[in-house]
Length: 486
Image 1 (cartoon, rainbow, N blue to C red):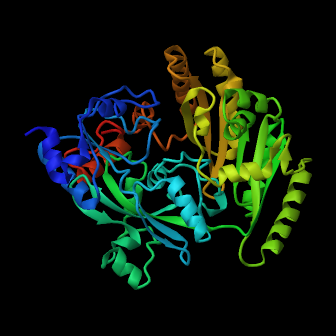
Image 2 (image 1 turned 180 degrees about the vertical axis):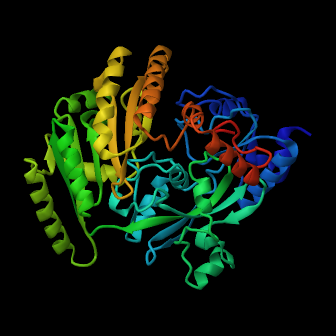
Image 3 (image 1 turned 135 degrees about the vertical axis):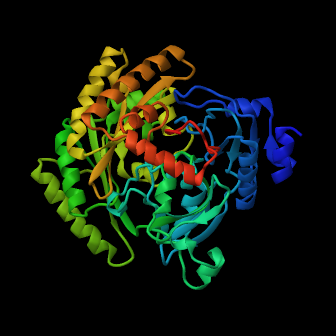
């Protein structure tokens, strides 16, 4: 019996494929991770299917690579390191529950942003979103990857907005984390008022944090509860722009410290143009009309006295900004606030905004603090000049996270589709900058691709501890081997 017949016998022959075109599409992505073809694609229907595949993989010693988002992928975590079976979870896409009272949604792994956002809005809820996420990106995967979200005042913990999980560990055991670990299953817990809102535990271990950031090496998630927020009754978006980033950072610090505004983030003119313009020509044209740096923030009013809330926030915001000699506005040249507000409250339309300039895009991102951002940007631009990469075409996105205690600093490098020489140039620039920035104190909390070796080679004791944890939950190392330090 061959591999296809074995897996087909577990989940159904119509849910497995070894078609050469299908396999070739899974062999690589838009990253620098070397291509490697899997042997098979499997599409389970639910937790029982996944449990069966994991049990079989342990016996057959076959690696499994979980995937839940649609293509294109860009970070190397879904490219097999040693072949095996790609477990495609995109068909597990049921929204199990939306609970407005407790502001939580329970969703299967394959539910995408384009699917969930409108359903939440019908219930008067919204997600704390990443910046204009891909339409076919899995909401659960985004939470597992700890992608930065754009409302820092609602970002209380690095794990937010992910709450409880059901996961099939590498041992084949099914496990629920946090409040969901109680008896009765989801239906039984809902009947007695449970909402899967409390993520900690069971007992003294926060198991969801073992799964987050693990790139599918510890377990395969089947569903999760996601924290939601109320949808505003009134909302206004403001721009604050300057030639100097320093003053905008100071304003961002004060806004977050005083708990003012909802969405708060900073970006350069190239990133803003990429969000709004449909193609390379439009981006180039728009960039010429924009100032170098832009701070975006919103003020929102909810069900109770929305006008009063917006009014006092606006007064405070204008007072803060005017002390810095800056004036907020609801337009920035031809860019209107209502247009950008629509963009950041939804999934990105096609083409995805990071792919509009060159067709491909490569990323460099890490965690730092707002007051240190300016030490990285000039250094990167200088390295770009040395590598003959146009610094004016680097997108820069600064997102305060966890109540502004730190921030995500991201750089995007557009690349013409299929241009191997330009891709190699960008790779050299990113690897050079990554090493330099790590020495500067950049925290690579999401170590994709070559960053894993860079990060883990610095801390032997931590790696040994991680390997012991891996040995508990995936003792035969069948889940996405080769992605972290195991």
